[in-house]
Structures are given as structure tokens and as C-alpha cells.
Amino acid sequence: METDPNHDGIDNLTAYAFDLPPLGALTETELARLPQLVRQNDNTLRFEFTQNALLTDISYEVETSVDLKTWELASSEIISQDDNIERHGVRINENEPRRFYRVKLLL
Ligand SMILES: [Ca+2]
Image (tube, rainbow, N blue to C red):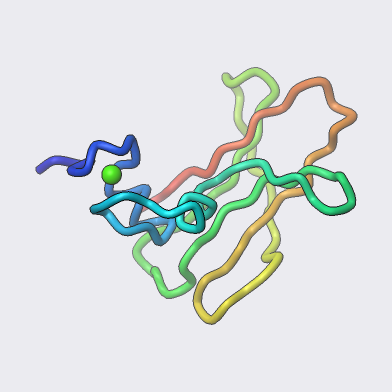
């Protein structure tokens, strides 16, 4: 089975996890559900992503690394909620020269 039938670079598991439609072109609003850095009104940076609280067959772990080799768990907090759709965020310390973040999906 093809994991990316619409060839947009987002496989079906990722689309499912971040509440995106698996087919068709994604809107800007839908794309914003994917993990990304978001500049806040107070000029701080946050790593944000959206998850559907009703999904019980998948879990999310935010990981962080300084070298892309060793990863450690980071804690995210719910920054907004609209029914079952939760927006999660991790505050970025911009005093650090470099740090990477990712969301690990666990089935
Ligand atoms: Ca796709």
C-alpha cells in the first residue's frame, strides 16, 4: 500500500497523527498543524504541533537534541484546545546556539 498517495511528502501516518486529510491539497491552516517553529507576539519562539485527543492508537513524544545523534525527551504543554484538537508547544531557549526538536509518533 502506498504511504503517500497524493505525493505531498507527508505520509499517511503523519497525516493521521496531525489531523490532516490523506488526499488532496492541504490548506495553509492544515499545514500549520504539522510540527514547526512559531514566533510569538512577545518575540519568543515556540515549537508547536497539533494533535487530536480522540486518537488513542497513537502517542506523541517530543524529543530534543543538540547534535541530531543523542535525543532526549522534552515536555510540551497544551497551549490551546478546540474540542478534541489540542495545540501543544515547547518554549525555545534562544540563548542556546543550536537545538533541534522533533515529534516521535508511537503506535
Ligand atoms: Ca500525503
